[in-house]
Length: 224
Image 1 (cartoon, rainbow, N blue to C red):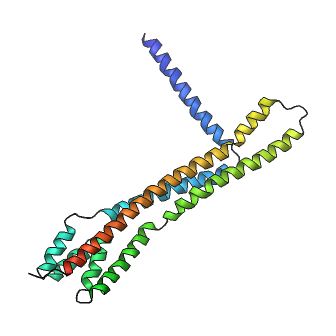
Image 2: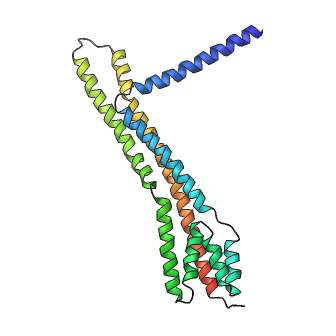
Image 3: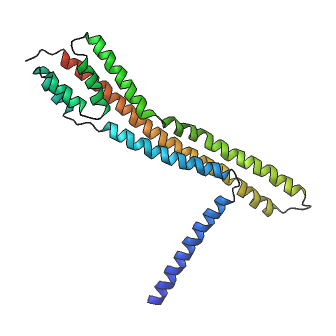
């Protein structure tokens, strides 16, 4: 019985190995344009995780941060509020810090300066995000170009054959369509990554707007 299980396991392992080898071998048959497609895929993965870490770090805001700032400002302890915002490293704190520096000036000027800081922080987290959008657009184009070039070469080769069989033509066209399929898959993955990160950036932008409004309301409250 134990021997039967070993034989079954070895059969499954051999089948899995053969399948992996087949997929890899199929990809390598896609032609020279598979190289830029692999490069685009690597770039998409790199920039997705690089931006993901940056956005997550920027989105980490202590829920009690605004409340503590409010307590300091209402009690007249502006220096403590400034120290807290200056020593907190996230976009919300940087925007609030700019507002604290402008205390004493008209509300419109304070709000405007805070909005400028907020826009700058959003720009920082959006940096390199557009690369994913570009990859999502050009990866399928690379795939289609690879397929078209491959089919042109294929037809030229079959023109020299007197009676090519349908199976030969089908097998050859199947291989040439690999680049199109690969390009579409990379494009879809890049687009999904871009859409997810763009949603996270929009959430951060909304959080900055809320913090801006809360800080302006704090300034309009009477001191204790």
